[in-house]
Image (cartoon, rainbow, N blue to C red; front, side, top):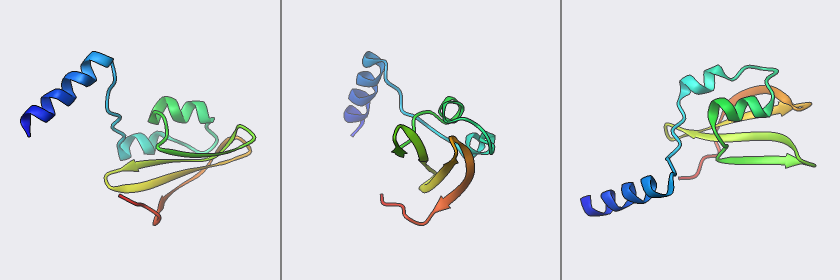
Length: 88
């Protein structure tokens, strides 16, 4: 078990990758009217996203075993909500 952990850690360090950790505090920094780019700057790349003609409709993030959705209206953050549609 520990060997597997160390191998994953080494692979992460060697490839320059990191595991994204998003918190509810990060989500609270996202405000209505923000651009999708600003959301990604705060939250990182979304776990799920839906776009219509390259315009984001929503981004979804998994935080503490919950799925949070950030809806966009006219290319800006509209509202944030916890989704009941979360699969592990």
